[in-house]
Amino acid sequence: MRGVTGTAGCGHGRGEGAEVLLVRVAGGDHQAFEELYGLISGPVFGLVRRVVRDPAQSEEVVQEVLLELWRSAGRFDPARGSALSWILTLAHRRAVDRVRSARAAGEREQREALRAGEPAFDHVTEEVEAGLEREWVRRCLRRLTDLQRQSVTLAYYDGYTYREVAERLALPLGTVKTRMRDGLNRLRGCLGGAA
Image (cartoon, rainbow, N blue to C red; front, side, top):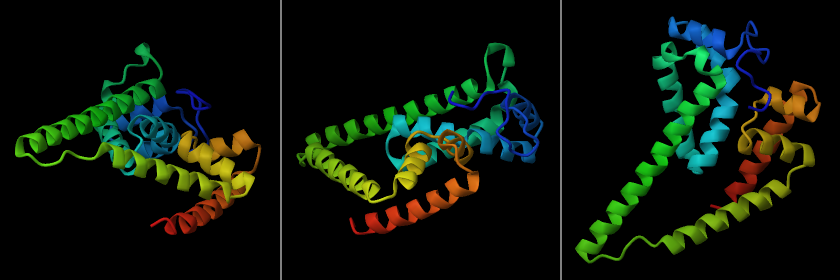
């Protein structure tokens, strides 16, 4: 998947690939887990964010995936595919489980509300509010410079790591990190006005 392969490193630590790092993680190597985290966190968050949609829920799911990865690294079988594919499959399953769980909880609440004679949760209002929030984010993104907007979009919506964003934009990593920080600060200020 996009620039991160299971056998090529991204310049983290020793530059080892995900397969090698997973073997070390299975042996309880904390340093290998940190390197693996740096290698996969962007793609994992991007995938989970696309499935779950809610940023806070997405972060929780990513934490669950990382914990599962730490506990089950020994189950990875390189004969069945790349490490990144295996990790993204774990992430996708966990994200789908979260969506199904949330949907089931919503349906239970509706049934309980109907039994109790209370008005059901107003899905129309919720969808309108979510649409307004998305529009506010779009407006705030338009206030960023082109480079800030590209960097933030690639990292937070497409799941690229900072290093991958730098490679994709053909810019030094330090420049991308600075633009990203400045862009996120501007976004935070703009979105603060939405509250």
